Amino acid sequence: MSRIVYVNGDYVPEAEAKISIFDRGFLFADGVYEVSSVVRGRLLDNAGHLARLRRSLGELEMPSPATDAEIEEIQEQIIARNALDEGMVYLQVTRGAADRDFIYPHNPIPSLVMFSQSKDILGSPQARTGIAVISTPDIRWGRCDIKTVALLAASMAKMHAKAAGADDAWLVEDGQVTEGSSNNTYIVTTDGTLVTRQLGTEILPGITRKAVLKLADEIQIKIEERPFSIAEAHQAREAFSTSASSFVMPVVSIDGQPVADGQPGPIAKRLRELYIATALEEIGQA
Image (cartoon, rainbow, N blue to C red):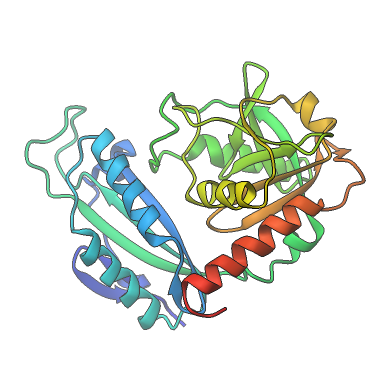
């Protein structure tokens, strides 16, 4: 059945959705996006996603097409009109349509589109078995803290992983892991310390990252926010990643080498359980 999507004020079947060929998101990747998880028909951590959207827009001096309340109402409509029980709502804001010019247009009319995607997040088979990742050079631009639609480098990293028979890629710059192709990355050292890259322009400030670190602190796991290398990851007790589309995902192999015993680790499993329990409580489904 065709999805109902939102395009600049209209809810239309996906086959009828149209954007101008002069849209700057199409011509220059001049746009930002957010992906909010949906569980049992309810948005998770959405306030955090909308706050990050505001930050991304501000960093690019891009006007917003709507208020947070208006955006959330459209998200809710997308969920309802598509009877979405579990998955994601994707939203994208671009600077809008203007004749092609590297200079930002004066007083642009921003474009807003949204659509839904169904996905089994709570019962993900990969979360039970863990995933394999490869390392690959981080060739992205210098402002990875802005959630832009310029995702070709990340897509290439995913394709490199697929070609190598792996599930995902961890990006490496100057010998240190920055983040995954579409997630934040973590290791647990032999002494039980949880290590993840500190916030900066090199990584996206993950909404799930923030929630998971809070949970780890609450159960008294020692946390170090610093870079780590692939060599350190190979010696780790366990490894995992976090994102809105997968929550906490155990990593059991890096560049073909098992992490510890090659099974999802107890800390990753515990943090996933806690995150899901917290999420269900947030939406009144505990």
